[in-house]
Length: 258
Image (cartoon, rainbow, N blue to C red; front, side, top):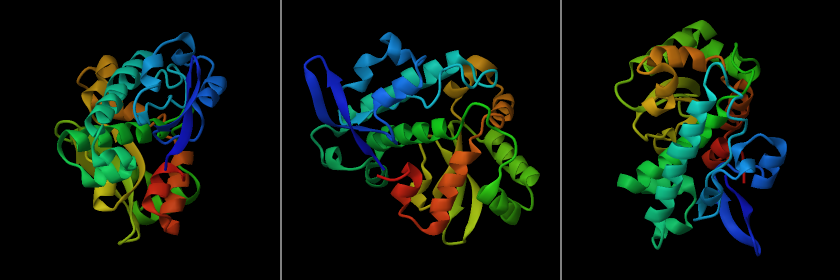
């Protein structure tokens, strides 16, 4: 799932750092997204310490407006997501987990190590579950399987929205592929819960933690979920579902390959 990247320093290049869901070097992200705050010197220290590194957002902070504000994305990514990555690196230092992939840590760990590993993974998947000018109804394989498994997109959307809105406390709402049943399902996970621990293939997710919407919507999660539908990345969902149904190893399915 992870691509090795090089950490740039004043004296040269240090190999070995790993980026969560890394498909590009950080330099590539900053070239493609010149308005990303990292180009203005923000967050430099977060990208240069520990085994796992905070990935850049795959779009600018303001790219999801008016549905999700730049202020919310900045706090969510630069503060909350960054803290999970930082905590994870501190927790695994000097342990057997230091040499494991993130998915394996999620499968094998418990307590604070699991919580921070899963939250780091979940947030990266969440960023990729959205895109500018997203939303609308899915096409391709996702549409085909939603129609087969839920009868229609409207029924799927209703079920997902209801579970997301009514979920008690913090957690995540997921569209997942169940290989055993050969069908899509909508599930909820509490707190840092991650579907790979129950052998479900994540296809798309919505973050239900209040820090993901409180600045924009206060305690109105329903309004947040309604807005989230306008930025869903169905291209990403199609990519994940195709790999899941093909039977690719789950790590490659969720992470897009090595």
